[in-house]
Length: 121
Image 1 (cartoon, rainbow, N blue to C red):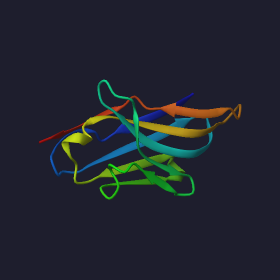
Image 2: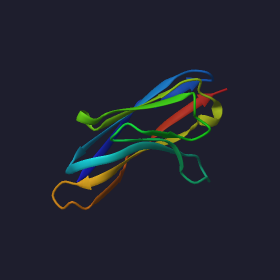
Image 3: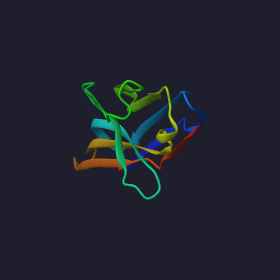
């Protein structure tokens, strides 16, 4: 079993900053990529940013230049630094990890429980 534990969400004013963390643990052989997605009521979950084990990042156009995703491979943890936050960034943010499970070698594709980010105008 794999667990993703998210932290760092909350309420912040327009233009403020927050840092989200996501730590993966459990029966993990390898993690090829981790990332963050977000969802608002009535809308589909959308990509925020992803990072591979080699450090290659991918950002949605809406957060480029404002958000920075980093990764500690030894800890299976990713950090999303969110600066210059806007009200439209308000959403539930979900962490995702992709890779291989430890015992079986089966595909790992796991999600966290979500953390609320609210940006007030």
